[in-house]
Image 1 (tube, rainbow, N blue to C red):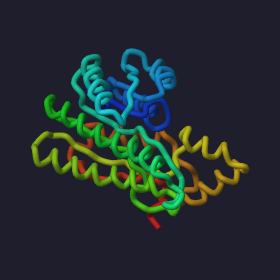
Image 2: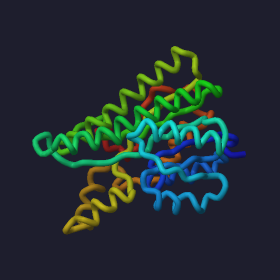
Image 3: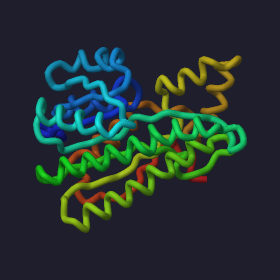
Length: 253
């Protein structure tokens, strides 16, 4: 038996990185998955190997209309929604002086607004069908600051505390909907690979990132996805409003 047998999930940002690996792990554990992303081409490529267990939905997480349509389509095609993973995200490396208002709004729209809408419409759908689990992707940058991560820090910090508010609301209302956040450090995803690839000295940048991690390496998307499987499964049925740090010891010191 799979750990997610009979459950329907919606995973955003599923065209690549942690979102894609999470969708793959969900299918391995018996779930049916609506994979969503604004990158329709990459999404179709990611969903194809998963066969009938997954569908690909073009989805702009910053649009409430798009969220309404995605949740409805997922339930129609795969069954009542039991899991929402808010994995879609974007980055911006700059200081408070260097960050433009346009940059700020773009990062907040995807990371904070997108997660807010995912929680809101996830709760609306799941409270009608017996409960479920919401997992929000924050970051270690939602726990500790960086001098050149003004918008990213703010957006991921917002995800952390939004998660706790959603968890407490659902508990108080008796919805049987849990909500938790996951906080990875550097994970080898296309975003990190692009950062390394753009550098004049890719090997040097990789070594610098690894040196910040006590375990001495960059994490893998599978390692984050495994934690998300736990939080989506009934194994974590007494876990809500919590934050799960996957950082190789980065924030321990």
